Length: 241
Image (cartoon, rainbow, N blue to C red; front, side, top):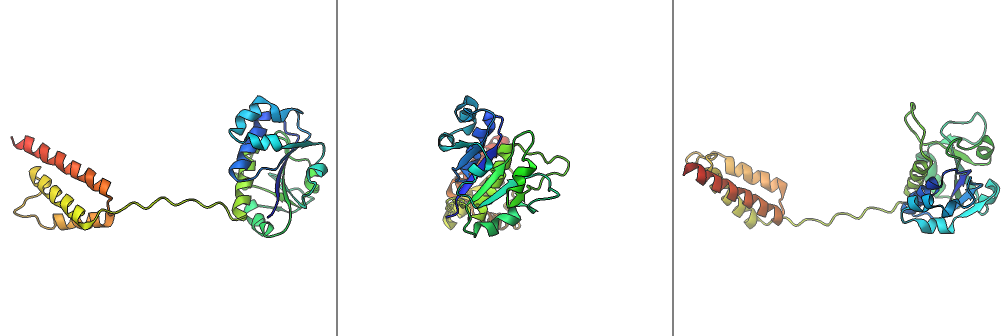
């Protein structure tokens, strides 16, 4: 299985570290390394723990190192994250075009994020194999670091095959007898409120029959519709009395 590491360089806000841990965990990743963060105890700060929101296990196993080279130990492919292409350095590609082929490789992959204020330095980008640029609004493309991590983590998880979504359990459809009983009830109610003339019914009831056949109501919905018919019938009786 491809190993995955998220590397944060010179992070200055403890809350962002916690939010990064949460973003990683919901996509099934747990290897977080911080390079020279502003606060040596950032992983224990209350803001980090609060923003992790149940992903404190990621913070507990996270490591702090001094350089990107140390953070990349055991990782053979580094992906920088950069909003704008550099004139020199690795090619710039979107996550969606670059990550699927990478997922089929045998590389250990590291995603590298810069500080909240300055992003990645050119020197750190040059050490990477690719610069990933998330397509954003050209007039406002600045992403919070935790948001950027969430996008990259999602795209990488999808490239790896995703988790899938459990389908909703199928709702049982009411049988023909229940539908016919409801239609009979509605016919009585429509007559009671004066909407249906039993002497000249035309095709109202067959059309309603076709409507409910297409809708395929559940037994619970049939119960509701019969309740509506009952209320209509009672209203029609009061109007006539």
